[in-house]
Image 1: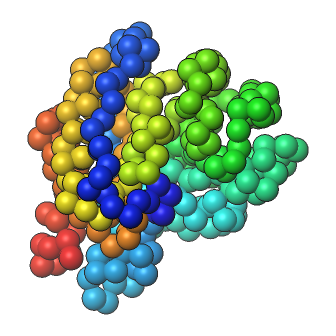
Image 2: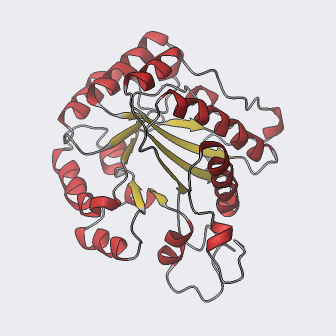
Length: 297
């Protein structure tokens, strides 16, 4: 992922902001989290991007990937809404407990910019509901130039979006975060519509690290900078998530990106092991369960 990339990561203050009181209040309000779930994965499974991840002779990349991680941020659906047969094919290749997190097509978010998208949304939902138990949460990522001046359009879209279909939102334009009144209006809308607010941790856009949850779900898109600090940043996330879980967090969706995706599986594996130790989760660690020689790469 190139979004938020900087020339010199060593000059960036990567410390995480303090958790807003509104986030902690929301988590406490939602109460019981005895069934806490955590899903950690990468953004892609194709061999071209994750060069070196797959053992020689791997015939089906998704089959292998799904034995290493319990989820995938499905960016492929951003470019083309999947057909029902495609979804069914993907489902056949993954084990029980594996979940897909498909991105809404850019025909909805970028080209139509949320206008007159009823049929496109219907096609996407009708196909992706076939993931059934393998559907984690879909997410809508708006273009960088989608601004708060079109707030009403976003509101109408979310109000009309199919209910009981899990959805998260990522807005990117700086104006959403620069004015607290605008930010609060957005968060109030998401809470009302039960839409999860995505947190993005990337070097060049620290404003998207708002730490403001609008549901008892933390959907975090972590972008490493191919720099030594990538690991200490993950350590800090584990500490924050431990606090959030104690406050009432019910689900964690954490997806690891890199400016150069090659190292994403290594970072994700490191994070999983830290999470298991600190939060008591029991996620499979890829370097212990995957390839025949017991190595990730």
